[in-house]
Image (cartoon, rainbow, N blue to C red; front, top):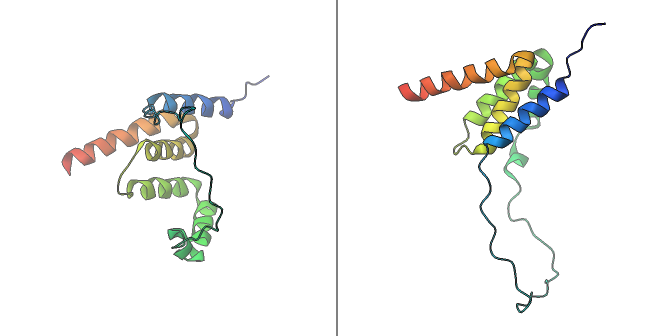
Length: 128
């Protein structure tokens, strides 16, 4: 009987590794004491001043993403990585998204793929 690879275990291992590298959150403001009172909520309709930025994106963008994913999943994951790289201020969530896209792209060789990406990225930023 052949042994089948359990990709869910690999994904769980990967996500645990990523979670251990994230910075723990800052403590929240002190809790309200019993002596403090909470103001009654005012019930009025919420108005959105501006629609979300993505509301202005052409619907063709979604169609193009679907076409890209249909042609080449690796190309789609590369697109995700490039899109996240172009964000103005990277945070741990962005790094997790890049690593997840690389994990999905490289399959069984995900560790090597992620290490190679960050090695190249470090080299590029050192030159630039």
